[in-house]
Length: 129
Image (cartoon, rainbow, N blue to C red; front, side, top):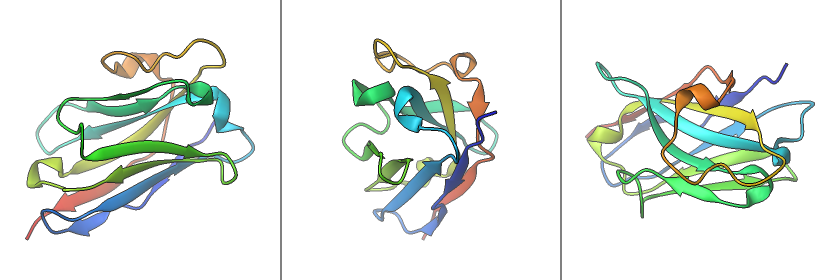
């Protein structure tokens, strides 16, 4: 059973940066697509970004393009979400999710929760002055 753990959330001022991490033990994440979703207060969970297995593709939702970057470090078996130029509307609980993806990249279109069977518990990001 793949268990994901997020970290790196916190309180930051508008315009600031945070880096979220998603990691798993005993499983090589390289062959999984890893996605980040978020749920803002009073809203449904939405996709943010995704990186395909073997880093063959990445995807960003329009709301974060140019501000967020997803990357994988195999040495530490982690996937990061670097978030720059944060806005109050980025305030949410951020979740990482995973699905096996050893073949053709799947992070090429809008993210759908149902495609990802493994989820972390989430980490809170609050953007406020």
